[in-house]
Image 1 (tube, helix red, strand yellow):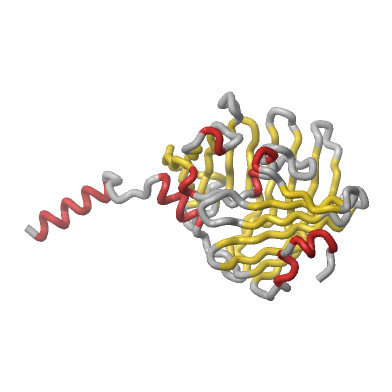
Image 2: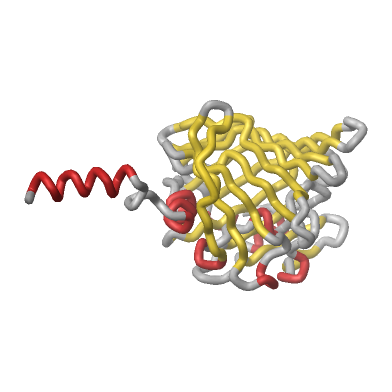
Length: 254
């Protein structure tokens, strides 16, 4: 009897009975280990369909508290965007709160949910793209397993449970099997046509945290793309909590 049970167990494993499903994979990706604080210098390059580049430099701060993340971005150059500041605060079970300070207006503006599909600072990322999306908001389906640049990945399709809860008809992610970090994503528009492709060009393990050092988001319909490159990053070095406030957003001072 013991031999029979052992044999059946092997058969079940071989047949995929114990394989992860789409939701389990998405949950593992969402729960990838993150530091308590981050501080980084980032280069943002916008490339139009003629190859013309617009390079920006920004400073980014992040913290994680009670499993919820908060992020602040401060644009340092060029002059056209200098001192623009952005704050994103993750909420438990609901959409993130987002605010932006535009120097020309000299005031902080809350980003309404209706503005989620709008471009963030002229990039190929929308405000919703920058959101920490809760796993429960989508239906996750494992489509297949496939290698990307020699790395084995799960390919998972995500569709919003509420059709009004996403600007995309669906998203397809390539999630690494070894560390559950997404390294490629395809985003489809409301007509189910491919709109954008996100790729992680450089992924490094720094101080025990998997870090996308270079990411490109390309709009395949307009042939415009945005490249984010981390030039320097520190984990768990401590960040003044006053940075993560609307007061800092408006003044730039702690």
